[in-house]
Image (cartoon, rainbow, N blue to C red):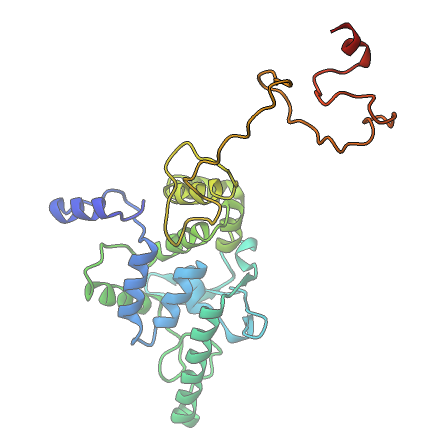
Length: 296
């Protein structure tokens, strides 16, 4: 369920969450990223919140499974916690190891992060631990998954945002994907679910909250000379959306058209539809035969 302004207001008044799973709007996620930008784990939160990696997948991500030139990432390993002890595991399902695209902003963030990590490698010298992981401690050693969760909670506490969990950033990624025009199948591919049914069961209660905007954009794609209802004006309104009513074309009095008649054909038509000589058809397409013309 999205954190709308009304839900935020009620939560502030009662202290009760509207639903066990709450999801930030894109604007709210932007506020969090602004607050996290100075932290060394900012690239982690940016990646997870836009591309939907699980916490363990982000911690286990290796540079060898990221192609910064092609803009692709494959979450191929996962760090799982047993009690407190972390261990490396294969992805949750076969589909979890699917390759997904990286947008230009994620690529820029990851390149800047890699440059920072390379500088840390030089600074630590022989003490550097070459784990090959994308997200590490300052000395290159692996992160504990709970360290990431703790950092997330600390940054969240520095803002006035309504609460979500680190796991809910995966839901934020689904919301952004859908809001960007992706259908439920696209959401499935991004989150790397094993079946479309799993995606549908998880997100059908969330994603319709964004469908109104998509429906409005779809409706505006149809050009009309007149509109029966109000049309949105401003930068977002399509050029063909107009409140101006065009005057009706005056009908010729000697050729009345019945209700629901097809549009008249041009008088420049030189032959019948079946290849007959010019003049064999009347201009009224509701009359199908010259014989009927003679009887009328």
